[in-house]
Image (cartoon, rainbow, N blue to C red):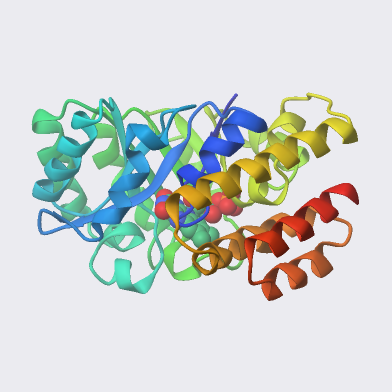
Length: 310
Ligand SMILES: Cc1cc2nc3c(=O)[nH]c(=O)nc-3n(C[C@H](O)[C@H](O)[C@H](O)COP(=O)(O)O)c2cc1C
């Protein structure tokens, strides 16, 4: 079973991926957080930085496109080709109102005709392998059912399904029943994504229906050794401590490269720790200390003290 790293804007960017791959483990595939393109132009050009080769030494990610028209996709495809990518993923899952209100992300799922036009335009002359990451729908979980004939009509390389609807954002339960029902009707390789936090969760999902693999996001931020646990690889506490230490040093190094001034990246590190602290016995205390700290020197001290208590 393949295991992919989920794209999480501001969390699993190159800063995280590079250090994780170098020091902790290697996923079968990783993805960039979305690059939003509208009216043929990059919405925030800085989002393109994540896929540049100089930021991806250890593993090439799959660049992710957020948009709803062919012209915008072409712009994105050119960026991918210029940087020697052979594959791209289309985001049909982002639940944030600023995105869904523009019929992008999960918002596109209520509009089969827009999806059909987009895929027709893309497959007319793309040089990339194309996959989709989607939810069950925006407003209700039956929307995906109408989209399956469209998805089956195009040579998609794989479909990753997060079985929630857009309206739920990240709240409430995943709908495993609907996932099974729809996965069986889709002819492309299927990946499951959502709420995998333990090796047992991964095992349970595998038993639901035949899938090509799983994609994990928050579970890995919480427990970086989840990948090894799913793969049945034993690691001693000493080894974990060393790997985590190097991983955090790598993150700090990459942050220094990206940001100028400690204040800029403290917020980012704090967000990472809002998940990561769960893995520590004194997690709540560590997170509180991280939220308060203002300089990198203070941060390093807190993190390395926490690692000694692991
Ligand atoms: C803060 C945050 C940022 C996210 N950014 C993206 C993104 O850029 N592209 C995307 O396809 N999904 C994004 N997601 C969704 C995740 O990829 C994933 O589908 C979701 O977190 C469920 O998987 P998990 O339970 O394994 O984390 C984001 C989720 C969160 C919480």
